[in-house]
Amino acid sequence: MTSRAEKRRKKSRAKAVKDAQARVPADNGLAPVLTQHSGSQGHPTAERRARGVWADPKGGQKDGQASVDLASDMVGRLHCDGLISDDQKQAARAFQNLRAAYIEELPGIEGYRSCLSDATPGFDDGDGNPRIIAAYRAVERLLGQAGLREVLWVCDRDLRPTKLPLLRVMLSRLHDGR
Image: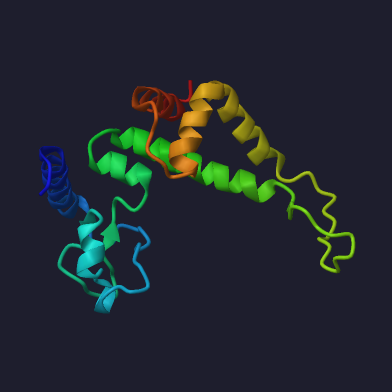
């Protein structure tokens, strides 16, 4: 038996799907988020469809366009549940892109290796892209320690927010740039 809260969540997700289907244009530029076990022609399986919030392209499945899961990660789920705004979602996506670029700039640290290991990593004498590193450091200063921890918790680790009001403030701050 399902609880009232589960029924409300299910109903709000169904409404979000309906709203998203009305808003998504035929060519939305989004890469399809599908599992390997998706159905034919880009349709998700019934089990996968039940676990997400899906937007189908207008006019049905044509020209190889696939359904897109709007709630494929925590940021998407929070947005579909109405817990963060469109601007906050955009700020979270921008942070995820900046974080990925920043991680790419870090030297390849492989962890512990035996002194007898043949597979030694190559030497990189570069300092990375200074603009990406400076941009990430500016975001760290903007958010502060507690704010950065919450944004990393949700955007990077894909976990439920521990302090939703703090997350909203930090994402709004990222969007506004102040």
